Amino acid sequence: MYARSEPADREPDTSARPPLVRELLLVVGLFVIYKLGRQAANGHVEEAYRNADRVWDFERSVLLPGEGAVQGVLLHSETLIHIANTYYATVHFPATVLFLAYLYWRRPLHYVWSRRILAALTGAALALHLLFPLAPPRMLAAAGLVDTGQVYGPTVYGDTPATDSMANQFAAMPSLHFGWALMVAVGLIVATRSRWRWLWLLHPLVTLLVIVGTANHYWLDSIVVSALLAVAFAALRLERPVPVRLHTHWPSGAGVAAPAVAGAALPVSRIPDPADSEAYASSSSGGRP
Image 1 (tube, rainbow, N blue to C red):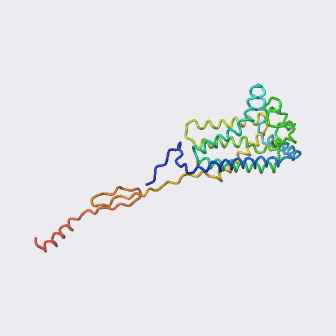
Image 2: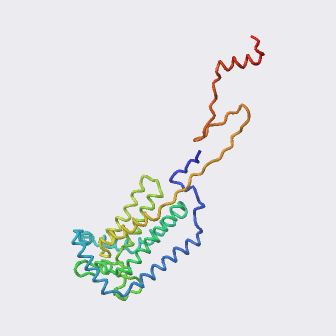
């Protein structure tokens, strides 16, 4: 007999929650390492522009839609441009932090799994930043796109990308804006059971339109990060609680029938044979009729 599993919308095992201080130090440490790694990838300006030409030509050769189609929609309204720039600048990190905080307190098992996925995804992205520096489409003359952050604001980047000390602007491939947003949506869909949980997919969808429409990323940046995320999902599976077997000792007194236990063999009572009864009676009476 196995214990009944808890409903999926409740976290049954709070012992899976790791120590808070350790997790804070771990997450902050991973973030610092990532920022330092991005800074280490600076300085490859010419290579980043050559790679941008290659990515642009490849997208056109495989008939991907032009990034300008999305930006053209945004440019019809200055309000939309401001909203898109603000979304790009302010939603990325806070949404991911809130996602991890919610899972830590309410879904510890899902938190550990999601943190591992995000760490693996970010590490793979950092390796690609180092190996494949890429100028975003807003810097590519062939794209003919507008740097909406600089023109309309707000922006998180400096005016001179080559000397920007706050961020590496030549780390467009892959897009962690989209990768993290997709992980947030998948993580919440897996961890919850609300009928509305599929609406979380709006977050990566809006993020995709924003990063392309503001000319900060190519379509290919999102495709590559999605492939990396799929590999991380395949390699790091979500651990499920192991069913607990209950060992119940039933009373064995005379006249008390033990309840049936699933999978256990029960004794079968033998039906007395009339011939056996007559033989027993004859032997008991010494053969007297």
